[in-house]
Length: 237
Ligand SMILES: C[S@@+](CC[C@H](N)C(=O)[O-])C[C@H]1O[C@@H](n2cnc3c(N)ncnc32)[C@H](O)[C@@H]1O
Image (tube, rainbow, N blue to C red; front, side, top):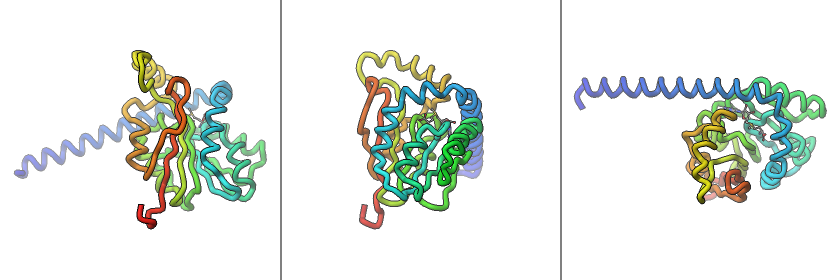
């Protein structure tokens, strides 16, 4: 490659990185606005999805004393059950990007007097954790992340070997004639939840995790639970 072409290519790469970064920041900012707004109206969604969240938490198979991560925790809808599983000797770290959701989640912690539940305001993709987790969960949050694959990588790094990440989430109609509604569903979710239309959550998990399987589907396949495993690398996986 001659030097002019090399310079042109480097400039194009830099420009595309700047655009990517601008889009990423715009998605995050919109997430903040959308979820701050919905934070006052979350009770309905909290009730509607309770059985699916419960099923997802069953599949974490937590033990007393475990450390668990809750990604995109919202107002803390999973806290009571997770705290019951890990008991007073475990630790729950929860992350959310919306300041208003974080306020509500912290209020829930305070009201219950849980000493071992910490709520951090952070972009899940860029969060850093010093001590690894025995399990992680994300309910209705992975599909709204600005970069789903980066977020999955962050979670993978944060887990101990032989642990799992359980995800309950929403997707367009996977098959059958009702797929014709997908463009409307996509538009609604984008407006309502700042849903990320560009990425497949399940594909991102399959790339990052050692094993990944959909273990339950609901509502004609539009909501589903996935279990992603991180294996013990030194065991030859
Ligand atoms: C639909 S709510 C889910 C809340 C809760 N997990 C549940 O099951 O109802 C999605 C949450 O993801 C959070 N979120 C969106 N983007 C995020 C990001 N980049 N990092 C962390 N949290 C994020 C939102 O603020 C919101 O609270």
